[in-house]
Length: 405
Image 1 (cartoon, rainbow, N blue to C red):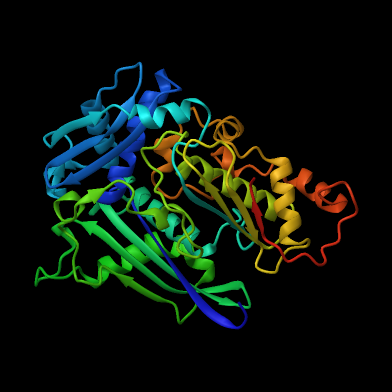
Image 2 (cartoon, rainbow, N blue to C red; image 1 turned 135 degrees about the horizontal axis):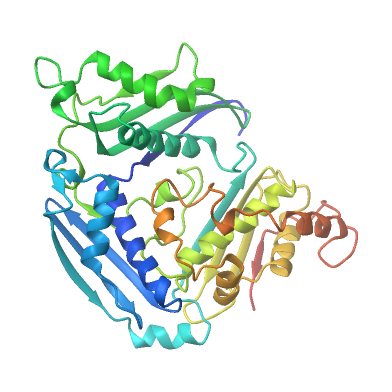
């Protein structure tokens, strides 16, 4: 976009009820994959005051101790004291897991996709991670909240928190942070005499220790900071808000800058293409941008349940491509195996990596295979030659859609 405009993204900390559920579902998935890499998992979690329900469908040869997994995770997150309204040691845990439908399994066993749906990938060149700046900053803020809490830099913080960042752009380039919003659970220690608000001193401490170390180089005299604007945030976590797996899909992806596919990620094994193909779409988009074939790249895959090849592949570079979007689509189809089996093998998705993805975003983190740019040189060379080995003209084709036979 041209001119000045702002974009806002949010993130939530590990102690947010929805994120607690995502982490539990993915911890269950990891426990299965450690012993049974071909286990099938579709695990959902519900959490409320004093109660965790773990359900869904799992088919595996191994045994998993759901109660132990849940309690250990809650302890690690920080729900270890009744003052936070939820206690890992005393909460009730209900295991409501069933086996997967054989009607789905017969298609997946033959190599087909585990579900129908659309999956989105995106990359842009505005950060070293090739991610939109607002969501990167939002994630780093809630990570910083956890850091200052666990290091006792601010000993009054609780596990639940949210962040929001508004970035101002000029002609597609981020130039400053306009607004930072933080909601941080805390003890009564920092309440003022009315008991209804935290002190200004506490707000200033949170801005100093959390916000400024993350956004400092992008703030100016007009940057606005809002901390616990309702007044206080003593009652938080599952005591104040019900959590469910899969409700933070925009936090998990690109912060609302682009569209989202039809499915959430956490608790799903990699035969579920609404997860694995979204990872593949990010991998492809990031390699296109890393190859400097475009400044921005949006990709959509479409799959049919039980069918291996995608039914459609779409590439859109928003007019920033050095070759046409149709040529990039052809390069994608030539250089990436987009079948469920191919995706799993390429990204090594049968390994227990998933709990780590369930907080602070699934993208923009080098620890995951879909963030590698090992295909960039191949794509750059292919674009110079053209998808059929001919000299490429970035010219004329405006087609952006490749429809599978």
